[in-house]
Length: 153
Image (cartoon, rainbow, N blue to C red; front, side):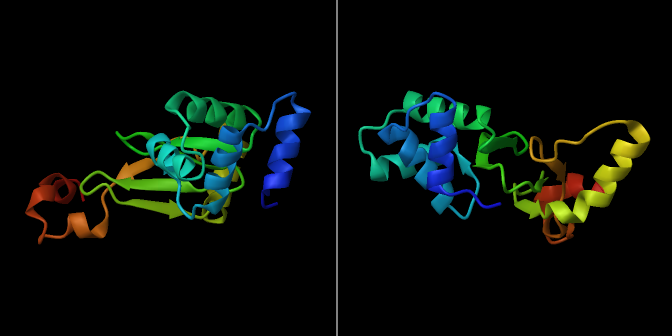
């Protein structure tokens, strides 16, 4: 079910929280973005709507929304965490050569996750860590800067 501002505000209030201008600006930024956002990206987006926003307020809003299950963060390799709506559960792939990120629809991995659960008694959390590897461009002989990728293929 897609999230809406009203639904998220309802969850915040039901948990005893307040919908502050900063929290509302974070909610708006998440809902309006087509991409996953780092905390720095979030701060820039929030300040466009609420110029007085500070880093601590943005981090507090992100943490409280994550505790409510509204958003998740994902580690994409050796970079900052990226924040996204919890209703967007996709596995991320990160190229170790160029840093390109590819998002894999959750449906593509359902059979694998089911098999892991059934045969190994383990539930995968696909949106927390990225899978790393190399994209086709970095495996290409035309990319001498990605020798490691070619030696692994």
